[in-house]
Amino acid sequence: MDVVMFEAQRQGRLSFYMVSAGEEGITVGSAAALTPDDVVFAQYREAGVFQQRGFTLKNFMSQLFANANDAGKGRNMPVHYGQNYPRMHTISSPLATQIPQAAGAAYALKMQDMQNPTRDPRIVACYFGEGAASEGDFHAALNMAATRSCPVVFVCRNNGYAISTPTLEQYRGDGIASRGVGYGIDTIRVDGNDVFAVNEAMKEARRLALTDGGRPVLVEAMSYRVSHHSTSDDSFAYRARVEVEDWKRRDNPIIRLRKWLENQGLWSEDQEKQTRDEMRKAVLKEFGEAEREKKPALREAFKDVYEEITEEQREQMNDLKRILETYPNEYDLRPYKDGANGLD
Image (cartoon, rainbow, N blue to C red; front, side, top):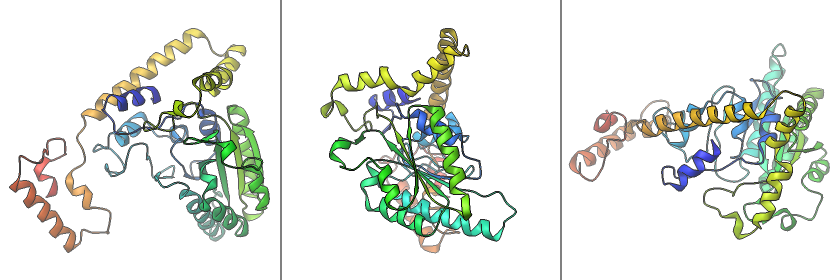
């Protein structure tokens, strides 16, 4: 999916995309340790978490193309996924805002579970990069979670770069893990390119988060961002191509898992080729269908702000409809569901 969608953006068929290459072990390994009732706050390189929790190719493509099947009704920029259950709060662009939100949500879960002790306890899993850990929101969130004993697992993907800033220029301390210790938070550092190690670390982190009525845990998963930061970035302007290629060969989480499976007699070259072909066909099929699907009806732009459409919003809808009917040649409504009637 990453390869296809990156190429689609370069062809002008998509406005924006962010690749997760090199960090798949962190997202899939950690998400596999969560329960469906756990709550997730992600950043924007957590496609593996979404997929592990039931997000389908159709869900991905519908959001990326902002079509009528998008759960967010086409209101957000690409890669800002979200789903109701298993609950994954919609990704937002501002850096690190999800970290204090996760601490607050974890405190709310703690209060709810205390009032209903018969239900299975839940945690919040919050994902972010090491660059986000330089924001004030990170420090406020960890301190809040520590002092209020919130059942939250902070998962920091330390992939070596905050856009173009390498870790050597971001901090002088011992990574992000040392900060958790400073806040009195149980902290685990793990090889993020070993999917099994990540899974074990997350299982233990979740167990600790539910100990003694709740407590925060910080997991620092060490990895490397193989891709450009986004389709708006050219990473070779600030790092050598040979560095990236070396990481691809030496420590790619997918290659490591594939070699392990082959050594166990559980995988083969034929299975690899067949699976890749099947996956590419499935991605292209959903890509084509999502690209052809119409955009949400114009009325959707006015919904979900208030419980019901207000009188003022109704006036705005009528004004917009009048403008569209007055200047039909200036606005192409064919891509939108229900066309000009989409405001009725």
